[in-house]
Length: 138
Image (cartoon, rainbow, N blue to C red):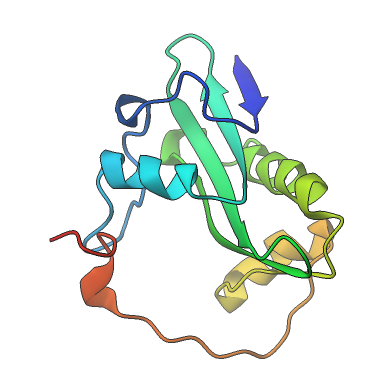
């Protein structure tokens, strides 16, 4: 059974295993926890039997006008069950007071986000792949 929550109470780095699948390098669980601790808003899907996080989404924001959702992940074995949609819905509810909430995604993911109220826009992004583990992490 799953529990959805918008706080990190009882969550430690030990509960954050198996994320960032397909990344050549990625944040370790301790860095992942710091990412979530520094989020403006977050939504977690937690397996009630193990206490492990099986999905998460986070937002960064100025708290006045805009927010950006940098990460949405659901562990591979839990995908296809509507968990990602629920996480974005939970996160969006926390951000509804803001003018703009942006997500950057690959074109093949636009169909996932469109029913959740997002629309495709043109944009630009810069990536420093050597920093995928997190700032200051080697």
